[in-house]
Length: 127
Ligand SMILES: [Zn+2]
Image (cartoon, rainbow, N blue to C red; front, side, top):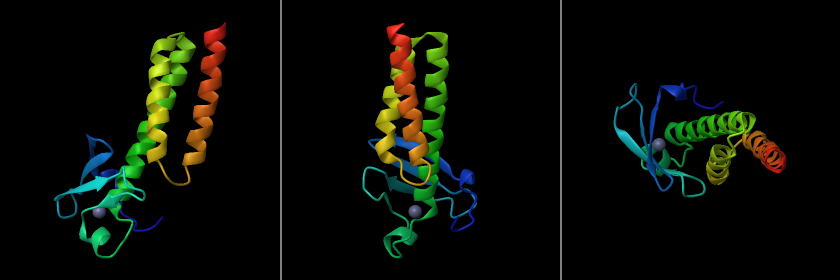
């Protein structure tokens, strides 16, 4: 894609309210704060603040959110199959809440997954 940094090597920790702490253990090792509640997301690293780059920290957070959303989608499908609709609802709601924070090429896939989940849930709930 852009920098060639292996983003999975970055540690992303969710702080709540759309904020994340990101550490690159192979870089400075210093924690940076990414605020995903801003559009586009902001970061306190020099690459972002002075050079207006979509820095590796922001990219790592996006990857983290996509992974979290995919996990929730799989979980929701599994719960629907098991007939555990209460847990399925929780996973779908969490996924829907996550969606606005996600940008990029994978977003349409996730939106389609949410749409199929809603249908699968409605079908399971009415049977
Ligand atoms: Zn950054």
